[in-house]
Length: 109
Image (cartoon, rainbow, N blue to C red):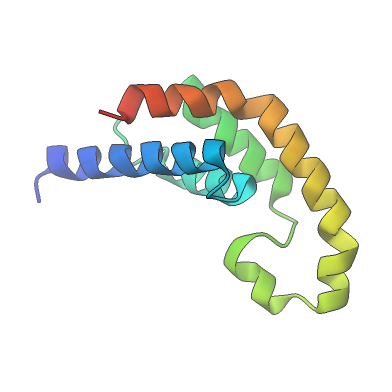
């Protein structure tokens, strides 16, 4: 696979994740974490506004039981953190929804 093919594959994945975040098929916070991790894979400047938004979200929620790590948390801890997870979803959408839409528009070819 060439570098260009790799970048195109990662850009397509970014559009899929962002689209899923918008339609609810991908948990918004899990999607934000994945978009943050894709930041250096899509061959854009390091300070790209759209991807930086998700890096910010990911850094604010890294203490929460989100994604695969949930399996290692006790039921009690998950229940205790759920209100914060819900508040974080609301905040993350307020903070990054326009960037999410932008990623879909940029890479959904």
